[in-house]
Amino acid sequence: MLTRFAPSPTGDLHLGHAYSAVLAHAAARAAGGKFLIRIDDIDGSRSREAYVGASLADLAWLGLDWDGEPLRQSARRGDYAAALDRLRARGLVYPCFCTRADIAASLSAPHGPSGAIYPGTCRDLAAAERERRMVAQPHCWRLDTAGAVALVGDLAWEEQGQGPRPADPLAHGDIVLARKDAPASYHLASTLDDAMLGVSHVIRGADLIAATDVHRLLQALLDLPTPVYRHHPLVCGADGQRLAKRDAAASLASLRAAGIDGRALAGDLLGQRLPTGYSLRMP
Ligand code: GLU
Image (tube, rainbow, N blue to C red; front, top):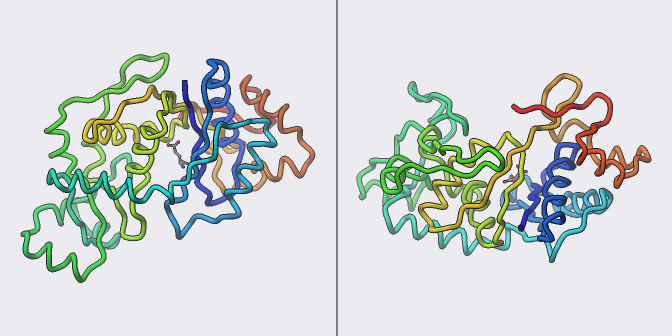
């Protein structure tokens, strides 16, 4: 059993992060396994170094210990690029020059689980035009999702305690695998890292169930093992909405400053006893 907690250093951790980290830690320790930390700092424009240290301090305050040094996604660019090259060599990704405004303006931009479904504008550009624009224009790289699904067929993953759950990558359309401003999207980086680290059980919030559709497809395309997944309910505030990084009152830093005992809080979260005003809900 090897689990991980993967904070993005873009804000303070809150009770929802604590719940996720406590579950993953407890699962690993109960099985005599390992608990790793991954720092999702691939987005250089939003990541702040101060939040890396603050997140690790919050986890230590909760009484969680982790194995080895935290893995930094920013140190893994070469592996992300190599995976993209493999997909490019098979004709499964293409450069996309569209701006957000271009996509929003498309009449046929319905929404899927990952936001607007890309209308496919750049999928069938002629090779010469593609080459010319790649030199001159910023571009991201998108997966030809239908082409990929045609290669690998139907996919499923094991949702812990619930058995197999079918994956529906087509619902996401042609997702971005490498961004204009970052060498890999969350989907590509997370899938590769979980495999490289040997994560056996991905324990994370149920807001990421749909992302697993995409991760399962990438595993099939890149010959990566499929972990068992456990998508847990989300911590919600008094308004019934899931917590966000801007909810300062629920931040672990403010709870710590208020004199709360972090280890006791971790034990309560594990027993699904939440502080007054908070509840656990499936989205
Ligand atoms: N950094 C991601 C997040 O905070 C991790 C998601 C995951 O566990 O895969 O949402």
